[in-house]
Every structure is written in C-alpha cells, then in structure tokens.
Image (cartoon, rainbow, N blue to C red; front, side, top):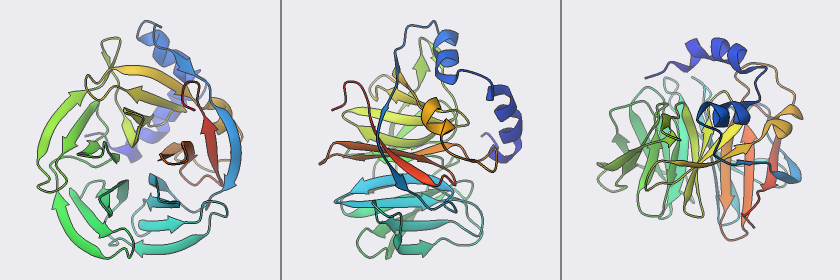
Length: 263
C-alpha cells in the first residue's frame, strides 16, 4: 500500500496549484457534478489533533487521532472543542479511521493491521481485530463496517466476525479514484476524503461510482497550516440533527457545512 509519509511532500507540490475538484472531474470526463458547501458555522478544534477519524453520535463528537506516540480516541465537546474523555493508543501504533455501531467504537491503525473495539460510553477496550491491509478510513452503513486502505477499494467488513463481506472499486467515469481516506456514511452514500486534496468524493456504495465531488477549497483556504500534512481529513454526520461537519489534521477549526440537496 501507499506510504503516506514518503508521498506527502511530492503529491502536495503536484496538487498545490490545482483546482482540485475541477481537475478530478475534468480528468474523468467532466460529467460528475461539483458541489460547493455553505458554511453554517465555524467551531473550535484542537490544533494538536492529527485527525484521522470523526464521528457524531447521540450529541457527542468522537475523534480518532494519529501519529506515533500521540494517537488517541477522544470524546470532544462540539461547541468548545474541549476533550471530555480520552484514551491513548499504544506508543507503537498510528491511529486511523473511526466508526460507531451498536454502542461500540471501532478504531483502525495504519500499518499494524490491528483494530480496537471500545465501549462507546466508557472507552473500555472490549476486543481487538485484525485485517490484511493498511487501515485508513472507517465508517458503517448500519450493518457492516466500511474500510479504506488508501487504494480505490472499499471493503465491507462484518462487525462481529471481521470477515470481508464484499468490496467495491471506486471509479469516476471509469477511472480509479485512489487515496480514499477518512470515510462517513451519509444518507445512503459514502463520503470519502481524497488524501492531499480539498475534495470529498460522494460514492454509491453499491457500485463504487463517484456521484459528486464536494469542493472544500474555499473552506481550506481559511485555515492556517504549518505543514503539508495539515490537510482536509474528517467528516462527521449528525443523522438526528441532519448536520454535516468537516475538519482537517491539526486544523484549529471544525466547520458545520450544508450541501446542495442535503438539507
């Protein structure tokens, strides 16, 4: 699989001056709509949080952070960004995607090929599971876990046996869309951060086809960044309140946004 650290600087240089959603759309024929979000409000976010996974569940924001020696599971107060509960991961693992299902939180690691299952209320570790690829993003459709590994493949995983149920290859007008990172399931579609871009792909989980690009370039430009790693990464959907939140690695802000057709 792709080594994030090695490719980061080179890919950032290639993408730095690009109109990223337009480039993706034009490169695949230009027939996929590009959605521009409306920012509803800007909220505080811990600048030290290297965001890898983001979940909103029952009034609380849950966040998985990365980096060796700094990876955590957190419960965060939405309005203030204050960390209300935290659990450190082992020093030798790099935390990745996060999903909530059935009162449990599922968290991936990048290269260790091990994931953790916690009680959502207490953060008590209940079990571990393994997978045979890198771990990048994680979400759920309410039945299966959906895992990305940096390629253009989404894997659907049984949350009890952790066996792969099926997989889809993500394409835009027939071309593979790689670097799928943090995931969120929203109104029947998978939303995926495309790593090192300001773009989210909206994906049909049945076919793997990209049905829209979400262009967050204007949002990203409002956020000060200290490193090429400080990229858009983090999508959370409040299903009850019908609110969509986005942030990035070491961003000082989390944004509630509204998309055309998603009200």
